[in-house]
Length: 317
Image (cartoon, rainbow, N blue to C red):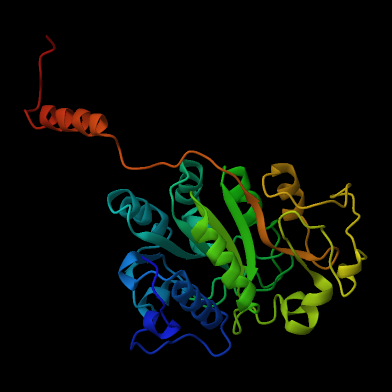
C-alpha cells in the first residue's frame, strides 16, 4: 500500500563522504526523493552496488543494501531478485565497474530482462583508484594511465544496452535532479530490466566533463529532452517548433516513439558539441521477464542434486 513518506525516511545516520563537488551527492538526494514519492516503505527496496565511488551509496540509504565486489553487483542482484521477487532491486554501478570487469554480467542481465533497475554513474574516469581512464573515457582524454591522451574509442553505454536487448534504456544528468527523479520513476514503473546512464561529475579527476551542456545555463540550448509522442526539438524556441533536429542521423526530424529501436540507436549516437545531448527514455518495450524457476524446474534440479550426492559413479539403467 502506498504511504506518504518524506525524503528523510530514506536517509540514515551515516556521514555521507564523497569528494566535495561530486555528482554522487545529487544522485543520492534524487534517489531518496524518488523513493519517498513512490510511497513504499524502506523494507521493500534493496540497493546492490559494486566497487567504485558509486559503491558507497547503499551505506547512505535507509533500505536493504549490499556492497559487493568489482563488476558483480549485477550477478548478486540477479540472485536477490529471483529469490526475493517482492523486493524492488536497484543496482548502483559505475562506467568502469559495469563496462569493464562487469560487462559480461551486465550483458546477460539485460538480455534476460530481470525486473531490476540499473543506475550506471558515468564520469568517464576511474575515480576511486585515482584517475585512470575508463571504458567511456573520450579519445584524447589525459589521465594518469593515458598521459598522452586516450587512444581507443570509448564504449557507448546506451548502444551497449540496446544491443544486449534491454527493454528500457534512458539517460539523465546529475545536475538536473528533477528530471533524474522523473526518469527513476519511469524505470520503477517499467516491468523488466531498466538501464539508466547518469552523467556524473567527478570533480577531482575529470572536473567539468559535462558542464558545456549539463549546467542550468547550458541545458536549454544543448540538451534534448526526450518525451514520448513529442517532437524531437530543443532550444529556447522549441515551443514554436523551431530548433527541430535535422541531421543525417535523424532524417525525419520526427516524433519520439519509445518502441522505435532504430530511432533509439540513432539518438544514442548524438553527442556534444556536434549535436544536442539527448536525455530521458530512449527506448521502452514489453518483453518476457526472467523470473524464479518453475516448480517442475526445481523438482528436476532436486533430482539432479540427489544423483550428484549418491557417489562418485552411477550406472545407467
